[in-house]
Length: 389
Image (cartoon, rainbow, N blue to C red; front, side, top):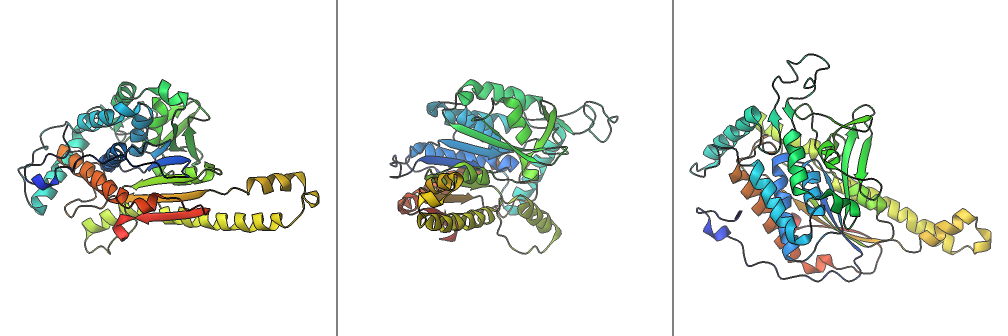
């Protein structure tokens, strides 16, 4: 598949592949953080393509919902096969005819095509992903198999088994974590391959968005899409990175910043952005506050002799001697003028290619700022976003 081929925009064909970028000096871990967002997830595949070309393969991949699926494909394949498997996934699930042509032009026509494509998915599902159940949850008897969802995700289970090597994931060469929420307790849970053996059900649980997709049972618990509670796993990385210096590529599919709506369609779009935007700034500010407190505590403990400290305080003093340095590269999908509130469940091939290209070029632009990638030898956290430059 050539996601860059576009007869109407030949200038959008890709530049030559990126030259390899040397891993920044002092960087212990490269993290790739993937937000949920359904059909917009092709943007994340474009981000990974640019990182792959630059030789910046992640050591730790974390995702929620569609981000969990992309994460599993990346972590569940050797580097030389990852891009090929991502292309296979996105090509297969966007293969539903008839709304894959490019003959419609202009924003209004584009909106119409996207709307028809979204309706097509609603009525017929997406190949290799989900399919309508015989009777939707609204018409099934209480307690019946399909009483709590409108679609069946058995096709996704087969897709994951085909494209993802879960044995490779559980060998732990790359750390993988995906987020879901417990249906009964509303507690957020991370399924992390450092603490348990992952399978297709863990990835499916992270993307089980109600009422469309069915909850997933793991053991005695039932799980829904992690985006219901937190649509980004950035906090999981920051809480567990320890003293390691981290270069994190945070890929958001919904923008926290937006204009005041002027009509009802814009209200629906903005409502979804507000609901699912990752709150990256809130997470970053929270971590900064904790970091400052740790620095103050470290400086205080350094002034006290060890014989005046308890065993617990001595251990804390040793742990605080090395605080991490963290660089966060934010990559945020910017909605096209003709996209509406169906943007996350509009799976046309045309839109998929547009999203993929956007992620690829945004990442190339980010990587052109090589000074952002560098570590300064000063503990703390810095965040960069090309859209604000």
